[in-house]
Image 1: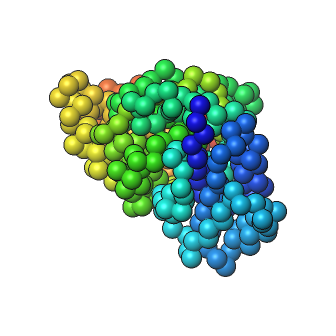
Image 2: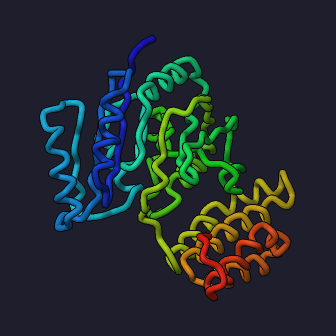
Length: 308
């Protein structure tokens, strides 16, 4: 098998020592023809920038590693685009700074890509820490996964992806106007032109115990509206092929939104999300989360202590 160059792009923002773990997981790969591009998306005057600069000093002199600093905080999409513009690999991997690769991830994905030229990308299974127990998240989905992404049934994990360079060029990278769901947005455009396959092995670890920088409140509502508006055409196309799927898509997103607002104790915003479901005639899907809502409201009133 030939050994094409693989570029691993690691955006970092408000990270700690997990960034070093992510970098080291690439350095320890069985596949050796790679480069690492770390893109620091912290504001220059913050402690996070200073800490990242200090952490990166241990890698000075390693020609496989590029360290690029944004002049100001942009977002994850911009950081990934910056990494891509400074990369040279035939294959591109993205690695979040709090995740890490298992040692043979790149080798097995390159082998699969070389033997399956009809696919523009592949993804692997992953391991997550769920309720304190390592759990393998599996999937057999391949081809066009637009339906699975839009219904929130399944989305290939960004840190598990390997993508051909020409595909990212075709798509002009990530849409930097998306501050959340960048992976959803990118993949939905990807499936307009290309298909994806799966390497059925858990080859990446997702660190779900860490606190993520997720938007809350009205900002989260705005992001959801933007996402659904952006892909309304694709949603309508799916609904023509499968009548009723549009309602399921809207319900799936607003069920998730309602649950998130309840977790954050934004009861009024949760009720607003439920009202939107009613307006779209999706109230039949309330059963998906009504028990969760009752438990959360009881806890809010002091009747329950357990986590939602």
